[in-house]
Image (cartoon, rainbow, N blue to C red; front, side, top):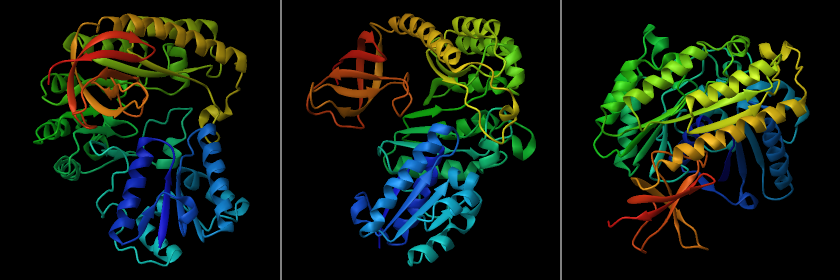
Length: 434
C-alpha cells in the first residue's frame, strides 16, 4: 500500500499530520510523494478562514482527478472535515471518507477500514514522523482554546483548551533532541494559558525551565502568547534561561479599546503597551511580533488611528495585518460588515507602511552586531547561505539572513555572523571565523 499525505494550514495542523505519518510508518505503510503513484491519498485540511477553505477544496478536487488512474482511496481529515463534514459528504462523493478531529481517537480503526492495512497504533501513540527540516520541530503543548474571540472559529473546531501533560511534552522534546533536533518551537492556540485548564494556574514558566534543562537543545522559541497572560515571572524565566530565545509572538489584534471589546479580547490598549514595556525593560534585545485586524465591523477612523498609534508606541519588530473576514458560526458573523472592502485594504496598507518604517529603524540598529545563524539552505544562483537567527521564526514569516561562506557549511549548522546591511526583511551578513 502506497500512501501520499498532504498537509495544509498551520503548524498545529502539521503536528497532526506528523502523528498520522508516524502511525502509517509504524504500520509498514509506504509513504510516497508522487501523487500519480499513490494507492491512497490523505489530505489534512484547514478550515479556519475563507482562503484556507478554498485551498482545501481546490486541493481535494485536484487530487480527485488521480482517481482516473491508480488512486483508489481519497481521505480528507482535519479542520475542514470537522467543521463541514455532513455538507462535504453530500457535495463531494469523490472523497471516500471524511474524518473529523473528534474522531481521531478512532483514527487507527478508520484508516484500517479504509486502507485495508492494519494500523497498529492509535493517534498519538506512535512516534511522530517529522516532515520538515530535521534540525527543527514544533512542540505542541496544548490544543483548543477558551478565549472565544468574536471573529474566531477555532474553539468551534478544536474545542476548549486542553493542556498536554508536562512529562509527556518533556519526553517528546528529549526524544527530538536525541534525534538531532536543535530548535524547538512551542505552539498552541494560546501558549500563555498552558496548564490553566488543569488547576486555574499558569504553568508555562515551569515547563520552560524543564525544557531549558534538556541537554543538547540549542534554541527554544515560544509562539502565540496573549498579552494579558505574560506575567513578570515568564519574562524573568526567559531572561535567566540558557536556550529560550527572547522572541515574543503576541497577537494583539487592535489598538483601540472599542475594537478589543467588540472582538471579545481580554485586556486593553494600556495593558498591551505595559507588557511591551515590561518585556523591553528586562530584555532590551527582545524581538516582538504581532498581528492586527483591519476593518473589523464598526471600526471608525478614530479606531484606525488608535491602531496606528499603538503600533507606533509598541514599536513591533514584526507585524502581520489582515482584513476582517466574516466567519460563519462566530459572534462577528452576526455583526454588520459595514467597513467597505476598499477601506479595509486602505487601512491595511497604512498599517503595513507604518510597520515598514518602524522595522527599518529597529533592524538598522542591528547593523554591525554579531549574531548566531541557523543555516537552512544555499541559494544555487548566488551561492549565498540562507538561515535564521533569534530574530526570525520558522516558515519564512519574518525574513531571513543571507551570507557567504565556504563549502564546509551544511544545513543545520550554526554559524557566527556580523550584520552588514538590512533590506526588505533580508539581513545581509558577513560570516565570522568558525
